[in-house]
Image 1 (cartoon, rainbow, N blue to C red):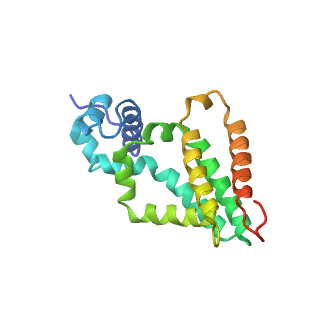
Image 2 (image 1 turned 180 degrees about the horizontal axis):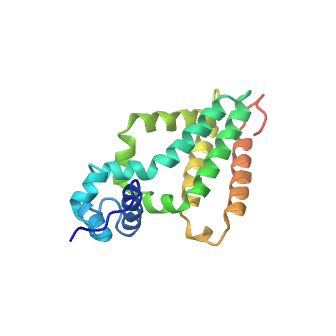
Image 3 (image 1 turned 60 degrees about the vertical axis):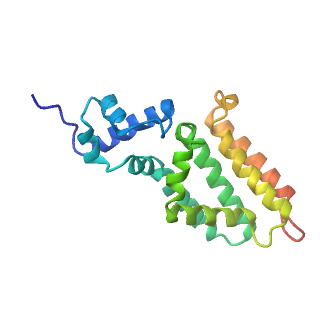
Length: 194
């Protein structure tokens, strides 16, 4: 008897949901295509039909977040001033972190995810464009350190169990406020705070 088929287009979504569940539980390195197939109750060939490799699944999981990032980075690059560009980039990053808490929690700090994402030049280029927006022109060492701290801190906020009970709207407001304070503190002479 043939296995039931998902309606066209839903197979990929089912694989991605199953993979994300397993990545959360076992990490990317600890999840195999066979595990994903078993979780779905299908053959490994059915998973291969949707994705050629686990790397393709990881990239498909993070693709929407990178598309959102591409959108806000492009918007920020069109700002009239470096200060406005920085603020738009900060708002975009905060929204990205808050809107993707589940994905960040599942994939962060997994060396396999880092390896897969860093191997793609387009993602590397996008994160470099973003970083340039936050550091601004002629950054001081303090500004560079502040941006590093901010990026790491925002990433941590997306996975920190201390923040599990904080609703998205409140978390968004607080992260934006604190990010602006940190960047304002490192604005150089002649630079207005963001």
